[in-house]
Length: 168
Image 1 (cartoon, one colour):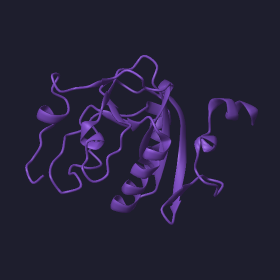
Image 2 (tube, rainbow, N blue to C red):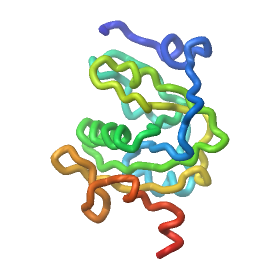
Image 3 (cartoon, helix red, strand yellow):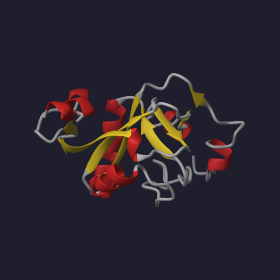
């Protein structure tokens, strides 16, 4: 676990990539709230500075340039959100993304993590434009649990879907 691991060797080498065929129609990306408006206007931008450059043990795991990461399970996304909140000290949001027409691959750096595997971690190298973003929802954490803008537990019902916006 003390060795440096290159993205070329472990995550994105074509021979080692593992396409995920059963990705649900919506997945969840975690970001900092300061990015909300930019995501709504421009989608998820490429070439951003990676949120995390090192794994749990401090080893280099991968470079994230040109990749968009997410989770097909909301609970795992909120777990990643609390990691971001605690380690970076910034409030987070969950971005819901329509996966239609995109190719997603397993994020083996997280699915194979020996300490805290997140089994639904995925990534794509394809552009996620504003038309692919269905919602951007702020999440707060109290005692390690996620809550929505109304102070209720954050669940799929908390997500501000286009259908909910039409009802308002």
